[in-house]
Length: 178
Image 1: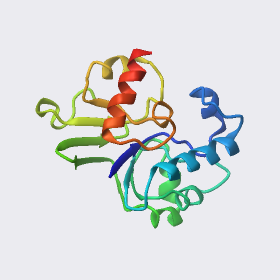
Image 2: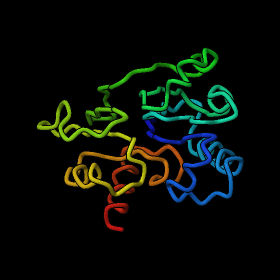
Image 3: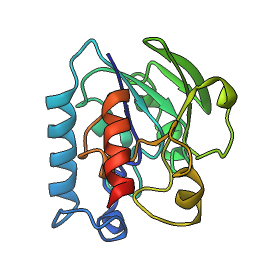
Image 4: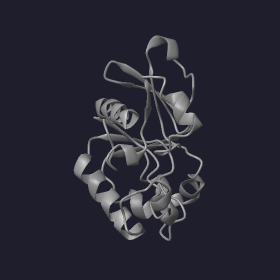
């Protein structure tokens, strides 16, 4: 199964406040994110990480990646230089791309860390899955919420675990309604 997630920010203290995450500290956040990931993902699943796996952590990215189940593909985000620089991380990633065009069942899906107002296949019913804006209802959100086929994979709006395409659709709908 294909699963999608973004913006874990493992080890990043300030993201707890920034995203209003329900964690006391990074140790609690990291443990919870790893637990929820591994409860959701099987060893045969492919998880597309739409950027920002780790940021300002006192542990290297491979420390987190080695604990996470599944085949992991990283779609580069603005905070992923640390992951690329950590050569031990590369062995835990099946692929690294800036943008990907994949199939999920019968659906075409365009993956990019950044939200795009128009993406390849936009006029042919392709989905666009992105991260970057977290759970902010900012100007980018106001643009993206207009498109039913644009889905935010931010972990904070997807129960802090990788989500299927159907779950992303449902979770994004709930997020827009709140």
